[in-house]
Length: 479
Image 1 (cartoon, rainbow, N blue to C red):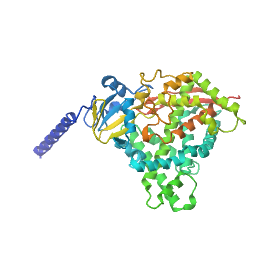
Image 2 (image 1 turned 135 degrees about the vertical axis):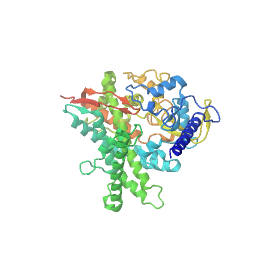
Image 3 (image 1 turned 30 degrees about the vertical axis):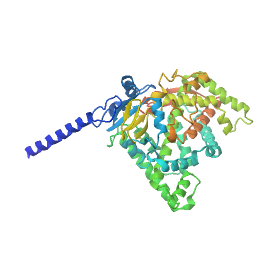
Image 4 (image 1 turned 45 degrees about the horizontal axis):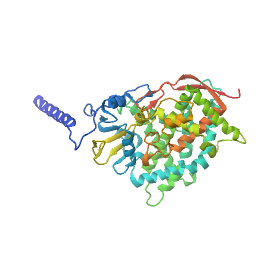
């Protein structure tokens, strides 16, 4: 028996050695970008997830850019990657969606967001899902239906903050945004619903960008369990709606169910549930992070805050009734506020990477990108590139802020500004997100002042977090 075990062990060692040799010595037609594939299987994953506390480009990317240039290869979670910090390549990738490239996410992300998530759907089906989302978040719906709700939620939330000794901004804005979005999507009421969806999203988000070890006690495990709990609630809700037509509430869920019940519908229940999950996540996490960063930056740059306040108070002076909510025309007139939000998004880099996969071999800038390889477009490396941006600081001068973001409207994107992605995958909720932030800032700066209590430190892992929160105290301006 001992000799058999030794023989099997020898075969395993030979196989592993052969595998490692193949890993190191792969041959491709053409020249791959420079870089290191790290260790077999794990590659350079550990370095990629190493936390850092700067708003600068993640050290993993920055060090390799300095060594290899803006395009380099690596291996993350067992997948060969090309990392691109090159604006021209990034733009090319976005423009070639569906031809040379397609949207792709690592298996760990797919496990988290579902096999039928919108990022994994392509072609005509993606266009169909996009049109479905725009029925809720398109300009006409924002103007006619969502703007009054956003005004009300911002006003009510800030009133509840006033007078409290301390408010943790990230959690409080996340609660406001989640309640609004969940109401419009699924008519969710945290008071009457037996399951606390937001608590499950908190567990989900804490492990979203973490080392993918799915064993009890790890952040990734908690993330998976949070998703399962949310999906269980959503599945129960959709079953109740489908079985009882009288439960219709005029929300996005009703629209989804109408689509499901059509003959030969393209939509399946699995796709619908993953879609609603993704929309709840996107509204809950990304917008609240951006608002928290905006308040942090405005607190640190009083000249910018003064200019933003001047613009918003000018709107009140022109309004017949100062207590009325923001109109669509007023929202579109907030030029400086829009630039402040763009600058916040540029510096915050809430999305550390945008993923695609090469569908066939192609050559660019002297390098070959093999078919099947993953590509991570790296927005922070572009947004914070000193050769593109003359400064990484807020300034009171509006024209300089315009220069800092490349002088383009984020609704159309640019090579140098990718806060909402680019190409045909440009975020369909971008207008909804900016509308929420601008309305909230309007109510905040015209009716209140605030002081920092504690917190404000950030950690990137590589996603953005506030480990100690951002705590402020709010005071009405008339007191």
